[in-house]
Length: 98
Image (cartoon, rainbow, N blue to C red; front, side, top):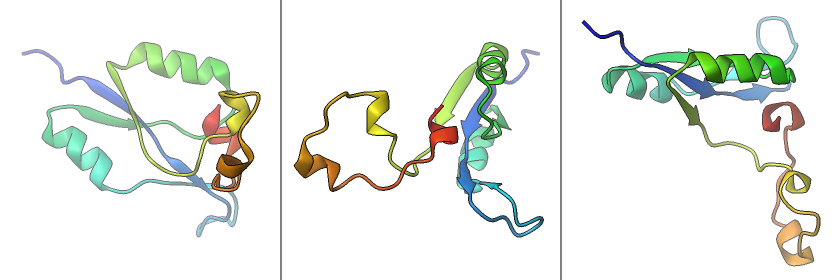
């Protein structure tokens, strides 16, 4: 029997977690449930700013699910953002964006 594909999921980071009042991960149960229903194994990636960790996690999985959430930092994709558009961008999460 062929092993089920491992699918990496990107969560959001909450500023103050319930458990330790530090940064915590946030992810709707619908994402991993959908992956399970499709025959995959969900794997939640921690929001750590380690390029090596992210690169290894991507190498080890068969797919990546990028979940919705905060806007991505405009400077990561554009050197100039029109003023009208800039007003619509919500605060970004630099650690998640990386």
